[in-house]
Length: 255
Image (cartoon, rainbow, N blue to C red; front, top):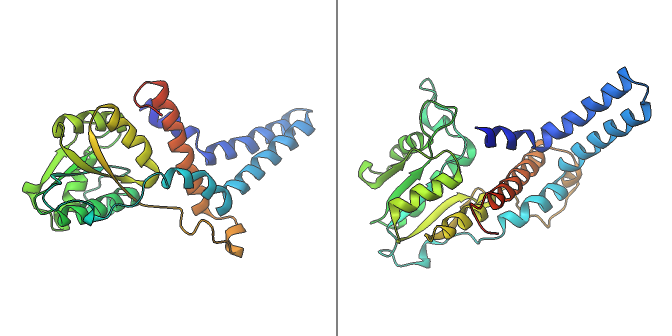
């Protein structure tokens, strides 16, 4: 819970919002007018920069490009026994269709996992993710969606205890042992995930999904207009870089 809250506080939007608020304090309640104007200016310029495609693409691109997309013809159809899908965001709500209870990140990962699972008829779909704030584990919600997408109950294995990627790596590694498996997670999240599994001597094969940086070298006038999607890309990048630093400091992975 602490890690989740701490990471969110360090995201670009809260930080760029806090700077102008701090600057307004100096402008309204102190005589340090220059300091106030400087802080407000820095906050607004930082928010502007992070809302532009060229900046956010440069932040997120190196993370997403570390692993190539997975192609199902890379391996013998009988060689892969497990397809592991790591959970992302979700919110269980029985009043909503189960497909609406997963956020975009979880849905994209799951669809990619189901696609690869269908290409390997003897494989099992391993869905990993517990709960921190919600009443239902993420893996259970993903399983409900997977069944609606045509995956048989007997082909689904659930890991519902983990609360972060480190626990996911440990618990999934115990389930799979030394078997090679295909690991599905967001492209930006793949580097950290692969390093954690490999440190535990597991044998993952990367299958990144949910790329956010597209046509990074193509510039139009829209590339230089502030937009919320660029800010989302910047937040995703900062979240992963903070996660990498945290994991290295805690000895959960090697860089």
